[in-house]
Length: 197
Ligand SMILES: [Zn+2]
Image (cartoon, rainbow, N blue to C red; front, side):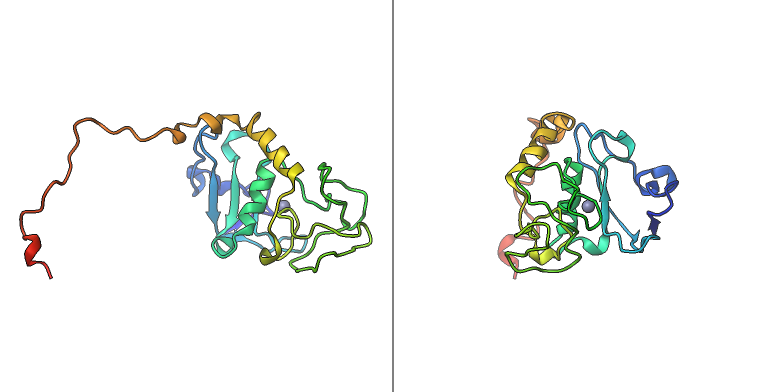
């Protein structure tokens, strides 16, 4: 189990020498670690995954998600990839104030996060008449999330065209090289097909 609270070792699972797996070249690949996270944060709350924002060091670049959050709706991964592509939390990370911003123009200002809950639209949280609780960058229940805003998509595309532009010409995008001379099964002589039940 990997402990996020210990800053000195919180990224150890990204290094083969420390019992994890080294990142692949981030100019060609998106690194996604599925790990057994100690999800009880020392300051309270739980951790389902975490991401490295654009601009960080290569050896720890990518997204990590607790194995229990993979499958199902899988919105933890969607949320973390949003961070990895430069998005901030929709409530502006100001606790429950109405002052912080996610730096995106078309998402309504929101007081706090929608802590593992589902809302009914329109939900007035005292900060905005209708908050965007269905946004992937909130903390709503997985089943209640279904969108990024246009402004968020523009931000992510901008990152893909600048600091993460290597992915667009990744060697992973090239078709596999097929040699002209290749071993290939043409016929099955024994046992005969006709004798198969
Ligand atoms: Zn987050």
